Length: 297
Image (cartoon, rainbow, N blue to C red; front, side):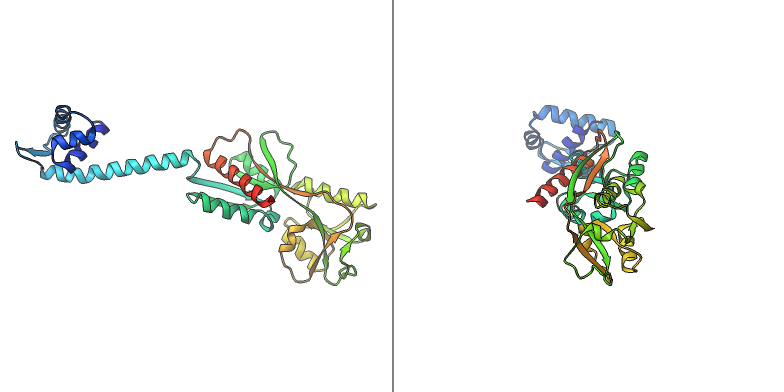
């Protein structure tokens, strides 16, 4: 039994006229009659009562028609899903992100992607840069938003967002009333910082800035997430240098100040496995690039 036999049968069942059905199928009437007869022989029961004046479905034919229509509908749905998946419009993506990405470009990306590709389910995980690299290696994640750079050549990454650095101070700090802060004024302050292995690029940038100001920061406390670092600042455990988008995290007891000195930009990069073939991943990457272009306008 071939798929065309089922389509011939459904068309004849709808028209109940061999000539009209053949015309609709763009074939001659004798081959249609022959194909229907072959289908009946294969099934072992008659589908139609035939007379010289009309054609009617048998009782078995009526039941068979309902089932075949469902099969053809499921087939069409399968074709549509296959095409959407091939275009990257269906499926699931596991996406990792550093905590600070949630305060700048990530919400815009997610909103833009979900509005344009609603058929793809997103599973989000807040992870440090080193955790995301591990997840990508293990195949537990598809795309990540990290703090570059990344030395591992098995990954492909590109910078999608850059921002200035600021200083987070306890609101009772003696510099809290100044409009901006010089790094040299922080030389004797206790610093709150994350361990280097979590995001070497950002860590080295912060240390380099302090060294250019003539001192090495005295790290009084380490914390993994930026939210925790800000909370420790609020608790007067020290000061911190952080990406400026962290200002979007409103925390009682903390004030944010611009840095007087010129500072390099802290970047966020999008990363995936090199030579990634998944259409869904490629669609997500393309959407992120479109979003960042709109962001920069």
